[in-house]
Length: 384
Ligand code: FA5
Ligand code: MG
Image (cartoon, rainbow, N blue to C red; front, side, top):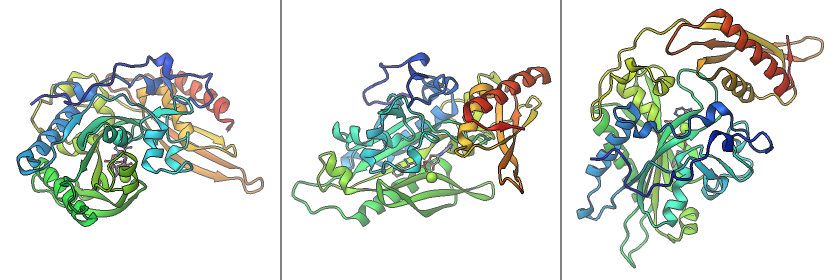
């Protein structure tokens, strides 16, 4: 089997960092540190754990659906450009204009009409309109988020979409049959990849599916959400020229699966160039990752009085922008309300760590000073 998708490639219009970061456009909130992740191509890198998981899922669906038995074959796409229209990312999926996920504190916008895809669901409607009825679509997705060992502003998803086969003139496939087909497909693929793992379905909500659910697996003594899915809203299919056909869709987190399968403890490791990481993985094989010693961390605290429109994610973005991959974690460690003025002050602890060497206190003090200045200037807060 091949490591690349078999669908058409659309990455030719790649934009440079200068074209992505546009301080002159009031809608643009893409930072240089995020921009440099575009085009890294982890899903195409041989022996990379994300690429390995992607291929395992492709192969499993390939075995699951049999064209000879009337199933649709899943066409794979893993080279679609991450810049999409807000129309495709949100409106086409019936996500209302005031939905939280569309806020500039949550989504990276290129301009008023384009953003970095926040999920691979952004490709659903144009692939349907292009005539694809069964596809898997993998790619890097971007969200402004908190920072810790399991959250990073870039991660990877795989979308699956399947329009139920229906003969001309045959009655409409029921929602129940579509949901049953979806559950069976996902349970088989997860069992195929994980072996005998405990799974459970949890009710969920997505504007673009009804009913909607999430699949969780039992891992390290807790339930871990690996995917969201559901029966596609009829309105979406109708808008794509599919009338009363039925379809299901899912969106799965590739890092989540890879961290479980390979015992990878930190989401930032997927981006490292350290050979001690890369030499541990081999295409087609699931092996346990053996952590190598980490370099020591350096901790710095920052306290400030909040401004009325302060949003945590804006602060995280400032820290990430200046500290880049040195930032392991940012956590709120203290909140204080002044008894007289009612002003609120927050204290955040920033954990700095280099993946490939030791840090000196002096170099981190310099970075921390820039973080303090930018926090005050960009967020209008008052440093303490
Ligand atoms: C979505 O993104 C929906 N588009 C999924 C979907 C597709 C639903 C099609 C229905 C039909 P959600 O935000 O829950 O949903 O993300 C889906 C999966 O991506 C999660 O289950 C998780 O595995 C992964 N994921 C989400 N956020 C993160 C994150 N910050 N870091 C790593 N993985 C994440
Ligand atoms: Mg979710």
